[in-house]
Amino acid sequence: MFRLTKSSLWGLAALCLVAFATSASAITVPSGPSDEVKAKCKQYAEGTAKWKKCIKKYSAELKDDDLYWAASVLAVNEDYQGALDVLAEAHNANDPRILSLTGYATRKLGRVEEGLAFYHKALALDPNLVETREYLGEGYLQLGKLTEARRELEEIAKRCGTGCEAYAELDKAIGQSGLTE
Image (tube, rainbow, N blue to C red; front, side, top):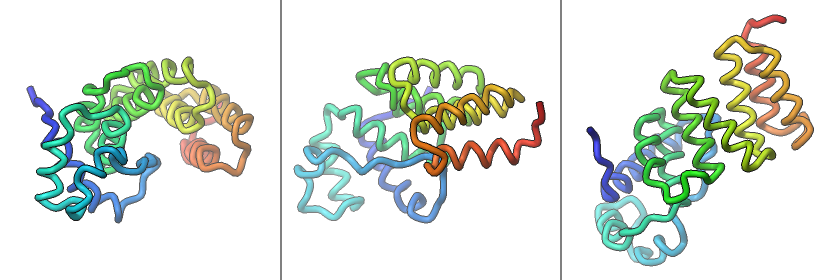
């Protein structure tokens, strides 16, 4: 069993940032670690060995925002199991962002039904998460459920209109799915 340590989390996240800078993905990576964590190590260039050592020293108790950031970086770089390992360390497993990203990584690992369950939990807590609705719609498409995917597209339109990124991404996925009713 792989045991994620705080030092490996920060090291891996720093390495992933380089790959992230040149990749495209539907996942939006939030800003980096908290200002509190950054402030303790501001004298070192971010990503250097000294910075990572400093972060390790001061990050005995990582915040969920920091874990979410690191897991997002991993998911963008298609390390879905790594993202799940990081998310498992979250203090509030019922944070809608944590649930949504857990669903995303789970779905991308091929466990679509399990991923959808996480999306439903996230949306029960915050029905306005349009990115989660986009992922839910994509999951429905993977299962051949066009009607359900279109329902999520309508829900996205109600919340952010037809010009937002979540709407555009799901609309595109529906068009490319080849599914018909």
